[in-house]
Image 1 (tube, rainbow, N blue to C red):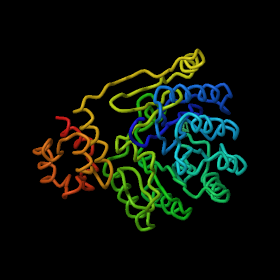
Image 2 (cartoon, helix red, strand yellow):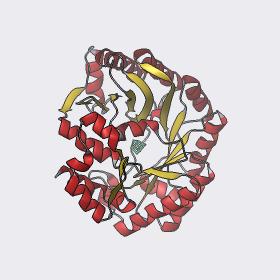
Image 3 (tube, rainbow, N blue to C red):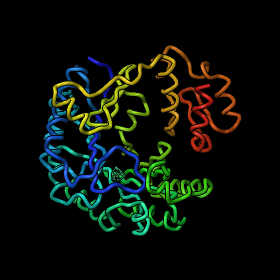
Length: 374
Ligand code: SF4
């Protein structure tokens, strides 16, 4: 039996249309082919042979656009994971949903299949910004999706938003936040737009000035916290007890496995990855062989660094006693001079139980990691 409560991530690499900023692995399709669902079922069984006895506490079906999947495909995938692993009764089961690809009937069927949390790709409340991003939906579609989800009994609703979009004013951003609050979302992710090389937006626009994006982040913290939705990670906000349990597993370095093309996993000291290539993945799985390769075997010092790097993304920071139990070493001794320097700079702080980054430290999380890796 592998220790710890694990997560399963399933990547569904199909989208109705490519968004203008996206560099995730996905291909365009109107629906998810049954052949893909069959291959995921086989891969789930292979993973269960490889990771015998893994306890699963969260399942996250992301993409791409998993909501292109019909009800029976969703049911088959969830049943396959349940049949392959010890899935806990209170498993958090999230599906990413893009407005414009789902209706009340499909949502109801997802709910019956066991889905109990949705992450809805709202992104912005203004039609002109949604079209800059190349999204296929409007605000009304997003609001309707959220209302339908709640009507069919899924109230653990997360909303994804993007800020620092070229042409987005401070008022646009505040209006988006206010509208999301009015939808009674339990969880909000606010991602700063990065213009990734190779995307249409990278060719067309200059990045927004850092001072503007930092001011937008401040607005998010203020408006959401006034609504009882508190920042618990660099980009994530939640009402109490609605934090994403799946993502917390990543930040706490718990084991997770990845199914589907382009998915990653990490169990113990080994990192795995499937090829970001649908045909290559299908060919491997259908020939009865796993598609994943071991991409990295972490040393103890890699694992200690990762525990700090990921744990410091969370507002609550790193649990000192848990770190010591796992590695037999104290973080305040391992990084004594770096942490003292960061405390003097106002980036980090600690007490007897935890080490955490201040808001200023969270803004420069990359620089913090560089110091800890040095
Ligand atoms: S829906 Fe998501 S994964 Fe698909 S193209 Fe848009 S941003 Fe990328």
